[in-house]
Image (cartoon, rainbow, N blue to C red; front, side, top):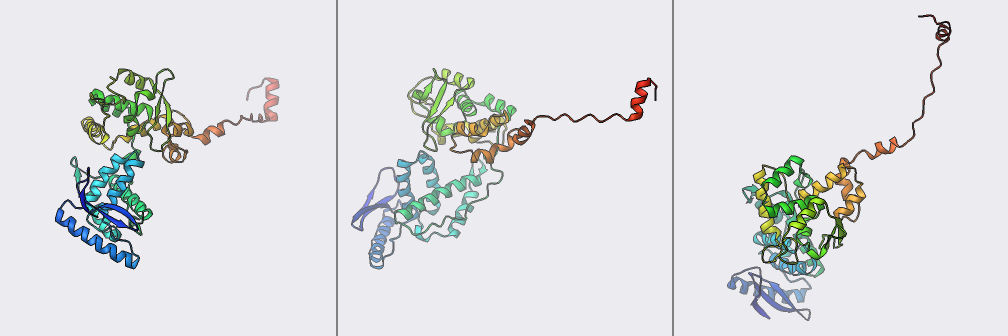
Length: 358
């Protein structure tokens, strides 16, 4: 039982026996003296907890550290989680997890909204994704008996007009491709012609490209279910022109997979700025792919399958308004009924017989 340093963590950690088993947790501080104080407080609270039946306190930083251990093993988005956890820890890490209030979360949102990234305010959707990670950490904390309740409820910001519904016009696509580096241009074309998520494209391996059957298999997906997508001629040209530096399709000269948070994100945002386009993120490529298919008359079920959705619910909500009027098409399938000809008035019939003019 004592303090120690852990690899890949900037904080001091402690180990302590609880309920007959050894528990490891972060003190949430880099300072040795503060860590000693925190550890002593933890031991005292543990003794009190054993006597009263209450849970021993844990900091938000320690809860998030524990959650990241879970995320690395169970989530393909753990790299994204790590970036969000870093922001949460910076603002909320030293607070006791069981005492976090809605006021603390309001202060966090205000601080994040006041933060600039690339000279621009942090988007509400970005802050919401961070809060979702915190909520998930608390849910796991309840499951692990580290906390008793989850304070992350009814705290999310409005995302009206979020860029996720944005699509690229043909003119914008041309501008974006024209200012992109050869590497980024290939990535953009793969996004536009496969509808893959950025993580799916970056995790694509050469063994999953089937040139004989003209398909690619996305195996590292958000849903955990692999799917096959036909290779569009533009995507085929990209794949045939890519150098092979390793097992990944998108890799650097050393064979290392491109990282979204560094190379691809920086390159994409810079190209968007150079093209003079607003409200565009990497996900816009996927949205453009689906929107163009729907407008070409592809049924929503097929679009959902290409996107990797388990049902058409999401596609119905986002893309149904773009499709040709299915109701109108359905009604037009009914056969036409010839209207009976109106009887000719008697006077006109008589005039017709005699050849007289009116």
